[in-house]
Structure formats: C-alpha cells, structure tokens
Length: 114
Length: 117
Image 1 (cartoon, one colour):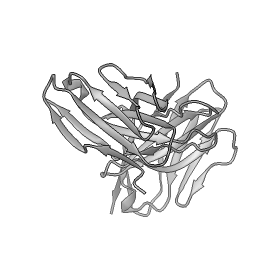
Image 2: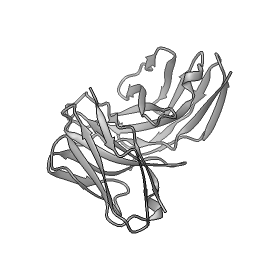
Image 3: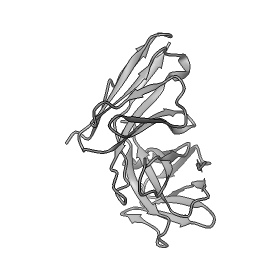
Image 4: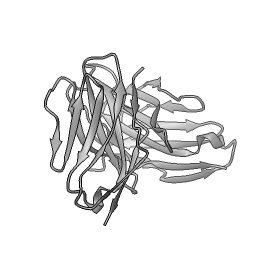
C-alpha cells in the first residue's frame, strides 16, 4: 500500500520558471492538502480540496495554484517561481467520515529556487 | 483563527531519561483534536499520539503520553525511557472537530529533540 506519494522528491528551479508538484493517494480519501514547511514556522496550509473538482485557499495561497481533476491526484503549480518559495512541500490526505481524523502525509518535496 | 505555539525550539535528553515537550494553543472552540507528529531526518510525518478535547483522560501510547490541560489550553508530550530513535523534530497540531468539511491541521513551530547516548 503506497499511501501518499509525491513527485518529485527534490527540485531546483531558477527564478521565474514554472513547475508542477504531483501528489497521488491510493486510499480513496476525499480530502487532500498541500502544506509548506519552513524553519521555525512549522507546516502551513497552502491549498486544500474537499473532493474531486473542488479546491480552496489555505493560509498561504499566494503564488500557487492547484487542481483536483481526479480524486486520487492533487497538483500544486508554481507559475513563476520566486526564492521565497524555497521550502519543503508536503501533501496530505484524509477521510471524510467523522471520527476518522488522521491525516496521512507524503514524504515531501524539497524545492530550491535560485 | 486557531494558533499553536511550541516555545522550545530545541531540547535534549540523555538516553533512557524522560523529557517533556511543551505546546500551547488558542481556540474559541470547545470540541477539537490535538496531535503530536514526529518528523525524523527522513522527513516522513509520523503520528505519535492524539487527544480528543472532550475526553478527560490523557492519551497514552507506549512510552509516549500527554498532559492535556483544557482550561489552560496546554498539551505537552512526555517521552519516557528515551531512545536514540526518538531523535526527531516534533510538531504539535490542532484540528477542529467538524463533521463535514476539510480536516485542516494547524501546526506549531516544532521542537527538535536530540537524544544523547
């Protein structure tokens, strides 16, 4: 059981370049999330999705876009990368049902923007 | 908005000793969940323990236990008989208990725990 898989694991971008991070989950979870982790700031929510075809903004959405065309995939896009977007990005997923409240995380993507 | 604060950026403990990591949170809700996640050097986020706010009893998972003080909005993690494999970054996290809707986690800043052999 793969759980939550993120692609790629590492990436270096030049300022102004674009890229897409892919998150795939095989647990049939309804909800998916993108977080970024920065030193001294913990994990902060960028965008999230409560189901196929729906997305919503989190705490730090500026500079990012997302899409959820298929239930198992959640894509995070950077249209024009900036050095401030250097971070470790985590995808997570969770069940919809009440009482099932553990979020499952991918292994993260370390992105460096130079 | 809810906030979570971990005031200890770094902690260290001797192997086999006990260590307590602190966490405070701010919320106006009465029903919520609290979590401790462990992040070893592999970067994987591992759920260590969870606490439902409506439960009076403190959660325990083997060597890990919490001290949940709802009125004080405090949620500390105690690790007993520390082992080298406990070395990691530890994150405290909060989530509202909502029947429908995204289960959004709010994280603290993290505490890096070092185990001295």
